[in-house]
Amino acid sequence: MKNTRHLTAALALGAVAALGLAGCASGNQAEGGAGDGGDKGTITLGFLPSWTDGLSTAYLLEDQLGKLGYTVKMQTLTEAGPLYAGLAQGDVDIYPSAWPELTHKSYMDTYGDAIEDLGSYYDNAKLTIAVPSYVDIDSIDQLQANAARFDGKIYGIEPGAGLTKQTQEVAMPGYGLDGGFELVTSSTAAMLTELDNAIAAQKDIAVTLWRPFWANDAYDVKDLADPQGLMGDPEKLHFLGTAGFAEKYPDAAELIAGIQLDDAQYGSLEDLVVNEYGEGREAEAVDAWLEQNPAAFPTQRD
Image (cartoon, rainbow, N blue to C red):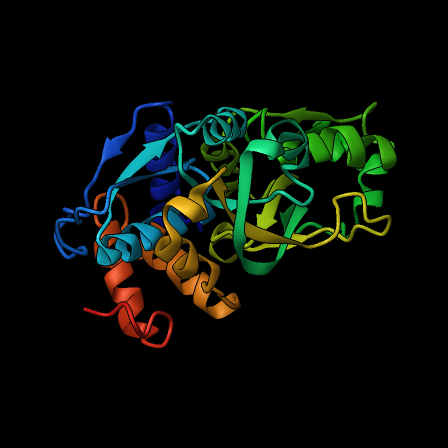
């Protein structure tokens, strides 16, 4: 059974991501949003639309920062590298869902001196290689002997993603897969298209995924065991700011540092933003989430 609703959302996000550096100053003006912003200044949020953890938290922050009196500009990019560079250069004020401990460590090694950690909001993020649940393979170390079943391919996401680097440079060599397998990279939307088509045909396929990510619930997939731990330990998702952010915007930094989401809260936020409401109705999705989670920001309610 094809998950057409979720796939359509993913392809739409991929199309938005293809716009590259084209950002839009939203000013919290969407119907059902937080109003017209305020006069405290403008804060730019940089994110990759196809990476829906950052998409979801970007619109959550747009709502909350608007209620504090800021005008919020939403800056979309297609790769993590330019996003970190923009953050370090001050072109972007906040990256609302970074993986700096492992997945994006190389970017932090390069740009970290000009980046400020504003706190983590989720503490169980992980990188995975996954297969459909009907595939009778349960561990990454079983892939080597079954390369022909998968046409020698693991389908990945963007070439510049930390997940791509970890899979290609650590996990595949460690499990002896760099000879019999190719990591096919393009985009998150393209990977989900391959997954969707394979499940519809009940074919074997291996893909790179991560948690939290809505596709784990939308598709009947299972994470392959990682007995050597080569996909990395669970890590925290962080809000990162350009250097000096907290000093310039102390009330915004205080609000951001207090955000903590558990599995249920994060899952419902992402599902509402990406799937239930979708592109163009993100502000409505955040409003709906706040109605469902009234204790999340008790001092920021209208």
